[in-house]
Figure 1: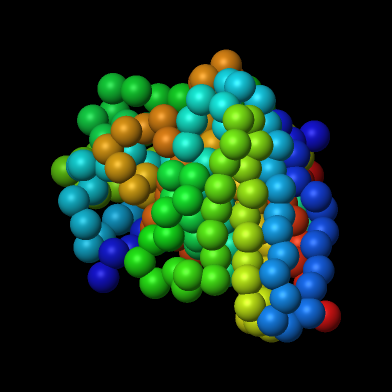
Figure 2: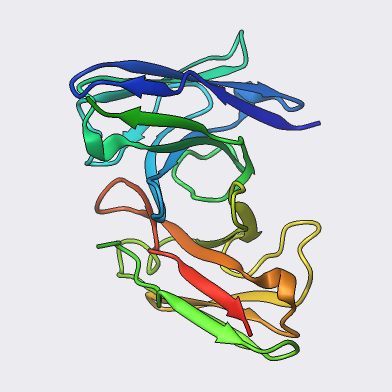
Length: 122
Length: 110
């Protein structure tokens, strides 16, 4: 079945780094844009970043620009989020989500992972 | 403060019709499709309405979406207890060159 599985979350000190992974299965990974969306404890959804199907286009929320890098390896059906200079406000559940179309600049996300928790704390 | 504005809460009784509004600007809702998500407690969000008013396969026709100018709304008719959840609107924002979500509306079925 169509599935996204995140991993790599954990506890990290402020200023530290973490790399999240999102393994895809059940669909042609290389044909779709993939997004990262996060949700701080008790808060709403916040869009983080998107990468186009061919990795040529990448967009980031202002809150993470310059600190986070989205990438993908289509040969491994895997999406990544490299997070550097982490702050307490980055604490959240991070979801990867598949776009329902090829285009990256749409927010129709039809498949979501279960999420991985990132905690930034000293 | 979210770019898209939603009421923080809404409520209704079983069988009732409720609507949730989502207000944006020309650069997001006014220029791009609006999407709606349902998030049940402890679970990942689920796409409820696509491209302003289209229901993905498996979504009951009790759910409907509409858009006018820079605003959109989600309507739920025949309210059921299992509809109790958080609802979010979302759109691409051309000015920000990024995605934006509403702050979410917590729906309570009384």
